Image (cartoon, rainbow, N blue to C red; front, side):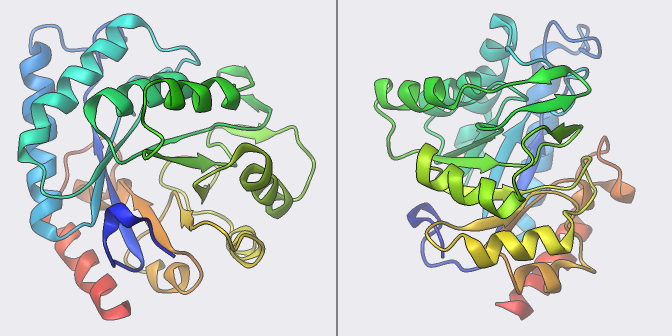
Length: 266
């Protein structure tokens, strides 16, 4: 099962384009400024597209420590970066502002994104404190901005957090589709770069039939065969980086090897 924005592609690979730390965050490089942010993302995007990925998702992973409500300078800067990079894109794109659903929808809507990813539902104890997203506000904002076509990808088991909802993950996934109208379900591991538990991914894929299910973290060239045997696609960031380090630039050769592997599985 695939989205129309990916054409007839099956087993979709969405690659992360991690923007450098945005203005107002502890790691922001004020000397390099916005020019450095744009140049860094452009370099990664060029390698990702040359390697053959199906879509790109812009994210602010470098804005540690993360917040639940995006500041105005963060929203403005991320929007500006995406707009600056758009002319270079040859594949569909999405956005994710960690961890603010309405900010993600706002940025995605105004930049013309095909999809947004976020924690839209649930209640979590997290590194950032009690995590209680407002799915209704994000969904209504998408409607009010006239972007019902923009897909909302629901990450249902948050990284850096523990769900306080004791229902089995497959039931939470099915509920997100039924009650919150999720366009896709994403299953994550406990931290960035760590894979989802195989049994959880399998149970969600076997239960959710109405929308695509993606593996959201920890996908690599060694496990992608097993993962794509179950899931509709993957989101991948860390494995494409130099040395497999989340905070490094993208390495083109790693992207090419991975996509060659995916091509053999399709």
